[in-house]
Length: 200
View: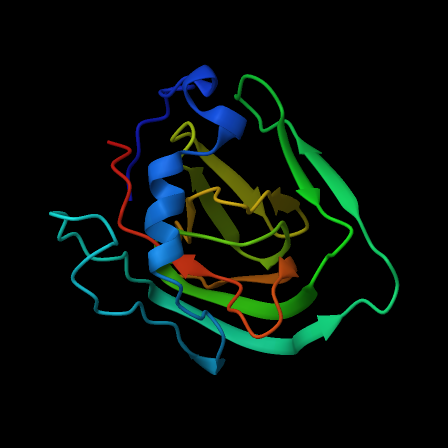
């Protein structure tokens, strides 16, 4: 997957709170679970994305597997958190607040086949991702910059409407990461697939 590596193709000033509102509306209409027991994750074959006259399908993962290690777990104590991320090559800081009602967490092992991709998606809350094998290329819709993370490195996805995709650039090796999803409402999926984003 080749993407243009130019910085800040979209101005943060045009995106209130750093989130594209049209994407949030699409995502709210297409909630699809990325939970499984070591099975491929597939997008719903819906032909619409919640907006009249738009017949684009949600993006489909390819060579992407999720194994849930710990399903919805609640916090018996009051928990709140604030994550601030300054991505390499980005202008400004992205802030993600986990409200005092932190809902539940989900922990999963995620595996990408060689050249596998998660497809474009978002999460209800922040996600801490630790890469343990191989390399991942992450692209956020907000700026379309390709950022690489190798085994032994971690990143935080702010969730809350941040649309992104993660791919394995290797043609021969798998990539593996552990993901802890925060702020997932009880009984809801931690992942929402959305129509593909054009970052060309």
